[in-house]
Image (cartoon, rainbow, N blue to C red; front, side):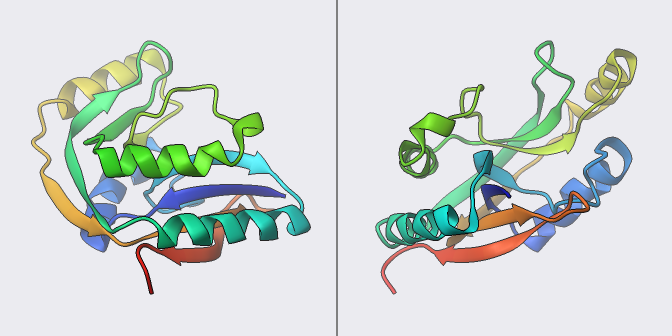
Length: 170
């Protein structure tokens, strides 16, 4: 079974991201706008229980933090992904490192760049047009993140919450 760990931003930011995603992201219907903390990985139901215990402990030792979304950016030329750039605060970087430290054998092939995808799988021309028109867009969202989520993938390819972890001591 496939699992992943994400932060869901506020409804206001999700709605704004979705205004672009419905046109430019083929995964629009499969998962809400999110910031990935741990990329998709395979695990059994039994393995994920142990993972959830570790995530619970990480969450209790992590204070809520501020998430700032600053501008539109792109991973071009590595791939044609357009995203909202999230400020890489110490708290966010530390949380991502702590979660991934538990599963070093399954680390991502990419460095951690905090972002919320708004467009992907675009042709080169499409990417150039869309990014060209969006990169001057001013984005300024700031919100407090007080939880993260362990998700699992359903047979139809969509993702749903397995467990939610609240940050800080209960």
